[in-house]
Amino acid sequence: MTDTSRRRQVLFDQDGAPDDLLSLLLLTQYDNIDLRGVAVTPADCLPRPALSATHKILDLVGRDVPTAVGVLPGRNPFPLAWRIDALRADALPVLNQRDQRTRADALPAHEQLATWLMRAPAPVTVLATGPLTNLAWCLDHHPHVESRIEEVVFMGGALDVAGNVRQPDHDGSAEWNVFWDPDALKRVFDSSVPITMFPLDVTNRVPVTLDFVRAFGRHYGWHVSDLAGSLLALTFGTLETTGLPYCCWDSLTTSYLAEPDICTFETVRCDVITRGESQGRIVQTPGGRPVRCARAVDADRFYQHFLDTLTPGEPSSS
Image (cartoon, rainbow, N blue to C red; front, side, top):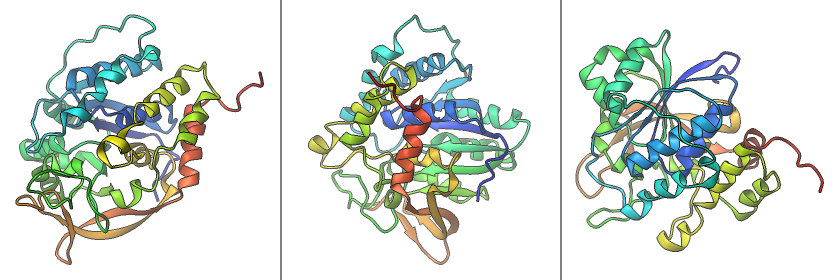
């Protein structure tokens, strides 16, 4: 079980979708998290609007955290129709109440992540709710950073359920964060860093529901809950346009850092297929690398945790 009695140093690598931004919001509210840096990977987002929205969220909650935007491409691009959610998030009124604080451009995210790891005063947790491209680059070019990583917490993969990739010449067995850059996950699997993975098997069990989103309306008027409800509302229409429900994939993964026993885990030996019609598929094999995988979730407890963290408490009666 994760020790939440100490402040865990976290580097957050995300790709700017509404659920990634909700994860950032959660991280800023956790007392046991020392957020050391935020990278934006150009996967399920347009990177500049996603970086802008990231800055605005940090400004909204009064946090000064270094950021960096990624430039390394994935082999299999996300659909553009999904990536433009970052534009919508960046334009939300709750994030535009005042002029954005100017920030100087940092190094590209892969170089910045390596720098953050090398300069960290103690081993850190890398929370990745997007692809692992930046981390894989760090391991290739700065192998000694392996000793600076306490744990990689990764949202991705599908073990005993179908994937969510619906692309020509693919068999549908992969999850998108792995499919975007299968070689990156393979490189991390080939390292010795401890990995805790949240595959679709468990994250699909916490869909965004109408009742869940409406619960934030009862707390309207507090900037954090207003933003959370607005980001959740941006996910509506996903089922109708893609055939796939929008779930709290990333925010469930993030909640592990504050409430590690919301999920139950088992160690699974895994490998990843990097080529062909199954590229991005995670396979269970006796010779694979051991990965601590979330296998079940207390969904009611997760939803309550999410609400408790991002609302100010009981709404006042009108």
